[in-house]
Amino acid sequence: MEKITTTAKKPKGGARPGAGRKKDGRNQLSVGGLLEMLEIKAGGKPYEELLVNDFLLARQNNDSQLIIKYHNLILNKVMTNMAKIEVTDSSDTIEAKKVAFAEALAKLTGLSKE
Image 1 (cartoon, rainbow, N blue to C red):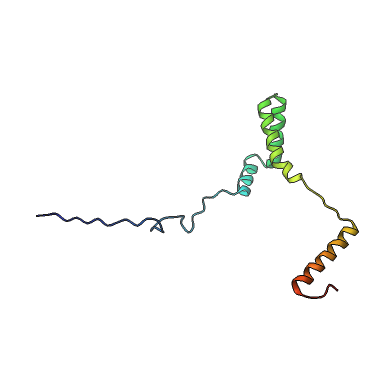
Image 2 (image 1 turned 180 degrees about the vertical axis):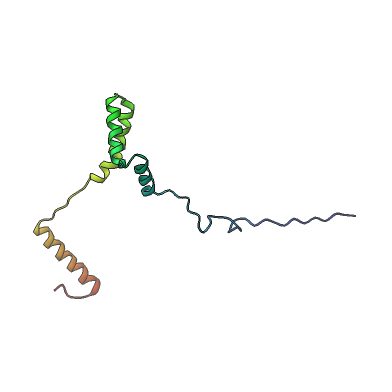
């Protein structure tokens, strides 16, 4: 007598019962929350003040490796916010842009340039 066996194939991919984040589950950290907690634990001192104090302490101790890390932090994070490009147009440039815009709009809409 021959034995017949069948195996049910398990589905691949797709949603699975019980998978994923629970509806009320919020285990994500927020930057604001971290900074608030840090300020509370540091006796009301804001993070910026702590950062400056730690940087000055590293300089005072001549810890060159730590000083370099602080400089990198400051240059990478702070300087990117300070880098601005200011563009000023002369009145001739503005007038030329107005004419070019009017011409392009006229071509698109089929209206006269005036």
